[in-house]
Image (tube, rainbow, N blue to C red):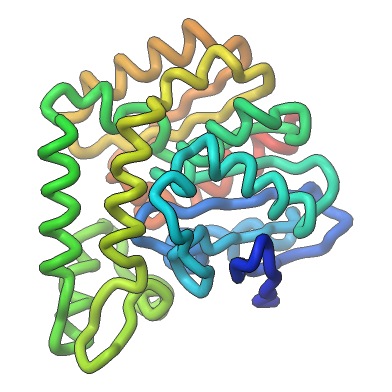
Length: 281
């Protein structure tokens, strides 16, 4: 693993590189309030021998500089910004994968610059939130995330571990170590991602719906779906139906027994499906 840093428009971009550059390239984008290592460290251990993997800390997350304006976090704005990032880190056709918020970023990038990538992988994202979750109004989402950030302060490291153990069915030392990339210690333990960054992203979700990008996708898509929580099943089905209607080349696989952090719950299954799909292209 190599941690690299570059500057794009005066902003620091931190990213991690695994594998041989002669192998197929895959760029991975993590979810909201996470980081590249937090989301993908375990997964890339299973893929690094066969792929050239690039894990990017998204703006305001991990070691990357936050944006200064809310509108910079709009998906349309981030697509343009990421085009400059990708050109510097890879400069050749690649596969683009994203989890949760990262999937939405990847989807909207593909909408604008699809000819630059070989395939799109969505890990339980860009499929339900927020518009297909009928109860998820802007106020509920915005206020819920605001409250979450305000309460995400811990006096002891063990309290952090106890909280994040609830996010997966498969806790281990790798996951515990990855927490250090999303939590800072300034006298107390709190999120690296600021309230401003997180709430600006929540606004972006509502301003630029994920489903508006579907009809513009003209390349192969792999969607991996979580099974839990069960109450989101109708939203998942609605999203899948819309995708199948508007995207010609799409493969959908459910990861049985997994929650939203499916690459944490079932890393071997996720790695195997990604590997088979890419190698079969």
